[in-house]
Structure formats: structure tokens, C-alpha cells
Length: 501
Ligand code: SAH
Image 1 (cartoon, helix red, strand yellow):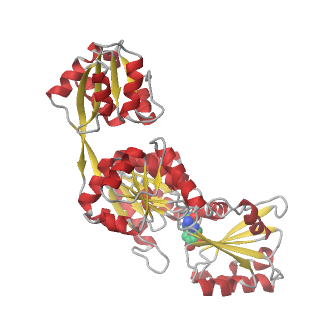
Image 2: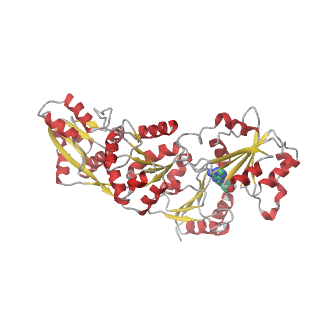
Image 3: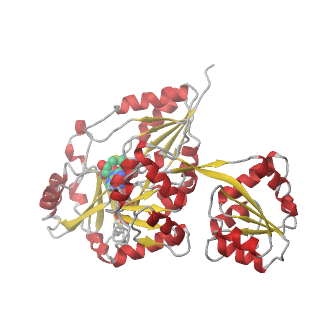
């Protein structure tokens, strides 16, 4: 008997990766095969594991890569081959997405499946345009309809006499091609020409655009602006509420393309915050992290209990330290009576995940401040171990030694330069470039030697004064510098700077 696989029919939501359900995120992160179409956003596809087979099946209207029958046959075959398949669809699985047919074919073939509903663009895209699909002042129902009927059924199976009721909200999907026909039918059945209408394209994404007009004006507006699918057409009095509810597409960072130069493992925080602000993160990891794990490092971990204080300067150091402890069958108790300092909240969080509460986290994330805190809470002759990046700045260590502390300075990891052709392409497309460390600047310059010239035309933002100084040393003009060297303050500083520009 052949092994039976499993197919999950998963709604990817309208685009913003933050709108993915937790169940969908978990299934994608463990998928063996991902079958996706053009509406699934690339940030979501990128959540699949590196060794997952990703099959693009297209389905952009008019440019079908595979027909629906071929897609259905594909997922049935993969299931029968015993694969764990995630069939990812834009929005919801059953809202004009042919998920019903796919489920029926799987059932007929005896392939086990489950259904993970997604947030439909019919509701989410208007919401991100500040348009509530219901509002007590205006309507008690809404109708989601297709503007692209099965051609064999003919156009008129929609009951326009009912749809023309001004007391409901109409939401049309796939209606850009039939807009003038739909409006003509609604007018014919008595809907007034002043009825507000909005068209929201690429809803919930940094590329979202909204066109607002009336039934009378909209067709001309679409023609003159070249407004295109994929879009939701919203018809009803609720459209007026955008004036007071608009929130997403008017923020300072909305629509901005932001280069993120951090190492992949660290880029997520910044990327998530950027998505939330309506910006599009362009991931360009110019550096990677490599554990050092040499004799000096191993010895320092093995004898860690001889220190009065141990300082970790980043979560990479924390990870390297605990990896070594685990490798030799030990755990957090090795730190027994040792006091712990952490530079940065992220470092403190990494410690907390290991059950360690940091005794000292300086307000400003620089090594001089961590040294000052340790000096205040130790005495001359005490041993202090620093687990940090190879070749990092050592201002704090100099200060500790000057104060008579015995410092073991341990390189726990090194940053390596990542060379990748997409980094230069992303740089060219970016509006804003962010640097979270001096090594990320070196990494960008290694990829794009004349980056300073390109950067002169972009907004350059650095996570803190030390990184800004490193940028200037390379002749890079810095426009925005965050004050306390955290991702949160970097995004906040960008927001402020753009808002006042
Ligand atoms: N299952 C999807 C709909 C698929 S039909 C859902 O529930 O959202 C394809 C149509 O969905 C497009 O033609 C467009 O009308 C709409 N659509 C999908 N994503 C959209 C988005 N992000 N913004 C606006 N419209 C979108």
C-alpha cells in the first residue's frame, strides 16, 4: 500500500503576513510541499522551510500557469504520494477560491485533508482602507459577490434588483473587468448615481491603493488612473467613513521600501515592525553569524562559575554560551552565584528564555555603560567574563581593567560577510536603508563597493550613535539615528523623521 499523505487547504489572508492565522503559520513552517498562487504574498511563502518544495501554480486572471483541473490533480497526486502538502490560497479558502472543488477531489481520492480558513480580502482590504463593511448608521447586511462569473452561466445570475438595495454594502471581487457593466445594472435598478464607491487594490500590503468616487464618476477615474486588479470594489454609504477611520495608508512609513541589512536570524523583529507600519521590508542580510567554539571559548564556559559577573553583549553570545553548556550536558545552574549583565533588551530576553533573569541591563546599549554598572557592583580583583563578537569594540573592557577587574574577553561568535546578488538589487529599489551594526555596513560595502553613492539618494537610518559613527567613517551621510540602540527606537525615529519631513 502506498503511504497516504495529507493536504492542508490553507487561507493565506489578504497579504499582510501579520494577518496569517497561527495555525496557517505553523503548517507553512512545517510544509514538505507548498503549492501557492499569485495572491499569496512572498513574505508568507518565505516562511516555508528551506528544504520545502515550492510549487507556483499562478492563476493570475488571464495568465493561468496551471488550469484549475491541473492544480487539483497536482495536489491529489502529491497527497497520494504520501507528501505533507500545504495548498496556500490568497484570502479565504472557500471565498471564490475553488477550495470546495479541491476538497471534494481529495475526498474522492481518499487523501486526508483539513481546511484552515483565512481572512478574506473582501473584508480585510476595506478595513485597511478605513472602510467598515457594516456601520450602524448605514447598513444591516453586506453581500460579497463575484464580478467574474463562470462564463458558461452567463452574467445575469446576479440579482441586481436585490443588490441595488442602498441599505446594504456590496463587495465585489474580481470586478475590475466588469465594473462598468455592474454599475450600469445597479443604476438601472435604482441605485443613485451619488452612491459612494471605493476600489481598494493590493489591500493590506505596502502597495495598497484606494480610489474613492461615486457610481457616476468611478469608471472615468479608473480609466484616467489606470487602476488595476487585484481589487475589492466597495459600494455603499460605509465608504464615507474612510474620511474619519483611515489609518493604514496615511502613516509616515506606509509604502516605503526599507532595506534590512541584519543577519537573517535577527531580521524578523525589524521586518515585523516595518510591516506593521505599512512599510515593505527588503531583506538583504549582508552579514551572517558563526559560532567560534574554540579552546578559549570552551574553557571560559566550563569555568564560568569563577567569575563575579558575566556580560553578554547580544543574543548570539547567549546562544553560543548555552549551546556549549548543552553540548557538555550542563545547564543554567552552571551560572550558580554568578551575576549577569546583558546589553540590550533582546539579550535580556534571550537569557530569560533560558530561565536567567539578568541582574543588570544598562539603559543605553553600549559596553561602556554595562562596564560602569558592573564596576558599581563589584570590587577590584573580581573576575568578569565578557561573551561577545570577535573584534567588537572594547570600550567597556578597557574601563573594567582600569578599575582593577580581571577581565576574560571571549569571542563567542563572529560575523561573516554574506555575498548575494539580490543585495544590490534590493538596495537600488529601497527608499530607506537601515543599519543595526557597523558590521552590516561593512557587509553592504563588500557587496556593493560604491554603495555610498547610491546611499546618498536614500534615507539612511542607524540603530544608534556607534553605528552612525561607523557609517560616517565610510563617507555615508546618516539622516536618522535612534537614541537607545533598539529596533523599536529605530522604527520610532524613522516614523518621527518622516512625519516631520
Ligand atoms: N479567496 C480570496 C479571493 C480570491 S478571488 C479571498 O478570500 O480574498 C481573487 C480576487 O480577490 C481578486 O480579483 C480581488 O478581487 C480579490 N483580492 C484578493 N486579494 C486582494 C487584496 N489584497 N486586495 C484587494 N483585492 C484582493
